[in-house]
Length: 405
Image (cartoon, rainbow, N blue to C red):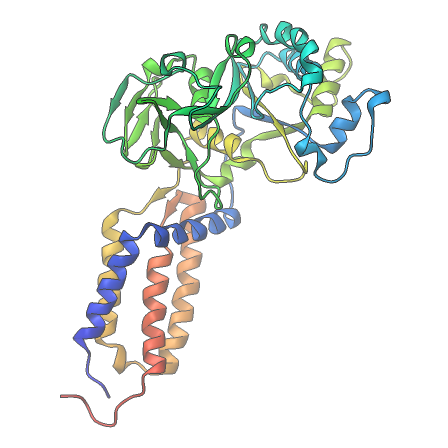
C-alpha cells in the first residue's frame, strides 16, 4: 500500500485554484447551471411581461392576398415588418392598456415601405412608453452623442469590466427615436448558455442601460437618474429592488422565470382586440395586459423557447435570481478533495469508483433540490473534476508491493 503523497495534495490544491481563477473554466459551470435549471421544477407567479411572437403563420395572415407567397422554413425570421404591420400591432395591443410596449427587432424600414411611415408614427405617438431596440458598435454614420442617450448619473465602482462602445451599429430613424426610448440589445460574445444577460454598457464614457433594464425602468415609471449603480455588485432600483450584477455588467437570470412569461402569437392578439371592440365573449382573456410590459418579437419558429430578454425581465420582477454559494464553499471543496487524497491509497479501487458514482448522483439530486426550492447554486464543475481526478489517479496507478518510505 502506498503512503499519502504531498505531491498529490499539492496538485489537487493547485488544480482547484486554477479552476477558480480561469474564466473559461468557470464558464463550464454555467453550462451545468443552465442544464440543471432546465430540469428543475419552476415555482413562479405570472410575470408582468407578455411576449408577442410573429412567426410564419402570422406573416401569411397579415400579408395582403395579392402579396402572399409561400414562406420557406426560417423565412419569417429574415422578413422585416412594414410600418403598417407595426401599426396594426400597436393598435391592437393599446386596447389592453399596457404600461410599456417594446420592439425587440430593430425598427428599420425597407425602401419600398418608407411611404407608410406616417401611419406607424400616428399609432406610435399614442403609446405611453415605447421602447425600441438599438445595437451598439463601432463609430459610423448612425452614431449619436452620449447626451442624446439615457445614462446613469449615480455610478460607483470600476468600469474596467464593462463592454465599451464608441458608436451605433443599427438604430431606427430619428422620427422614431424622438418619440421612443432606446434600449441596447447587444449580447455577450459567449451567450450560448443563455443565463447571462447584460444590464449595463459603457458608451463614450457614459453608463447606459440595456434593453432589459430600460424596460424595467420604464415599467416602474422611473428614469436612469433615479437608479443607483454599484458596478460589480448591484443595481439599486427606486422601488427598493436590487439586481445583482457581475463586473461585466451582466446578471445571471433564472431560466425558469421564462415559464411565467405569457406568450401570444400576433393572430391571438388581433383576435382578442377584435372581440373586445365588438363586445363578443373573449376567446383569450387579455385583460391582465393592463400595466404590463408587452414585447414584440420576430421568431423563426413559434414553438421555440421564450427568448432571453423576457426571461430576464421576469427574473427581475419576481426577484428570482439564482444565488451562488459563497466563495468559502469553493475552498471547502478544495480542502475536502485534498483531505481525500491523503487517504486515497487506503480505499479499494472498486469501492472508490462506486462511491464516486454515488456521490456524483447524490450531489446532482441535491443541486436540483436546492435550485427548485431555494434558488441556490452549488458549484458543480469544481467538485466533480477534483473527485474524478482522484478516482482516475487511484485506478491508473498500480499499488506498490511495499509501502514507500
